[in-house]
Image 1 (cartoon, helix red, strand yellow):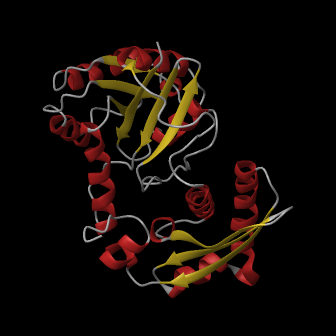
Image 2: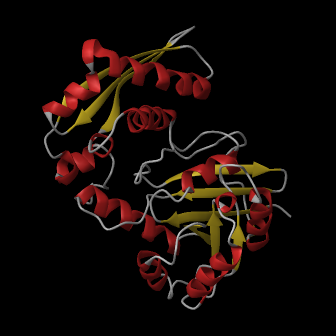
Length: 298
């Protein structure tokens, strides 16, 4: 019997949702960094084996928003739970009971979708008794369908988690062709790879003040020409992103090209530019144009 279904991965920022998705898919489809709120969009990674297809929805970290972009990110994550077959609620093994996680779980009490509690980063702790005490606090709020301890980074128990996910699914069709790894086009993944390098190389407010879009994607016989633009909010940020004699922009470009060529399996010529759009994260026009918010009039 062939099984298929949709699984949403939710939790606070920086809990390892994207790392888990990449581990399950066995290919990089979601960007990761040590900075919170790395993931901004809900998008799918597609797992295939001989008898199942699982579409995993990687979601933005649920947090107390300070901008309209932040509000969209948190609401987008929560909204997935009613439309999927299973929810993975991730927490960090080393955290104490967090009030914010308690609040999230309370919002999920009336959701009929089964929920797995997944404790990530189990490789970082030694005091298992302490962890069990914290888990019991969460169990008082929600009747989880299952509880699992994993390390998404090292891969510990991830295969076992996938097997238990399959047990929750029912017979269904293959939603995507064999070989598809994401529901997003290659251009989206390229934009994300570039943004990941900005997260990696810059600090303070810059990582969260930028977005990336493609101006051009031209495929030729032996090479793909890509022109991308980084949008930031202030001239001072633009100066840092370009760097002295363009050094920062060159580093972003060279590191991005490695991931892009691995994705496209072809040589890439990448040009990157930087422009300023003041306070774009709080402006409806830009959120819609940059794909962070659906156009309700369209």
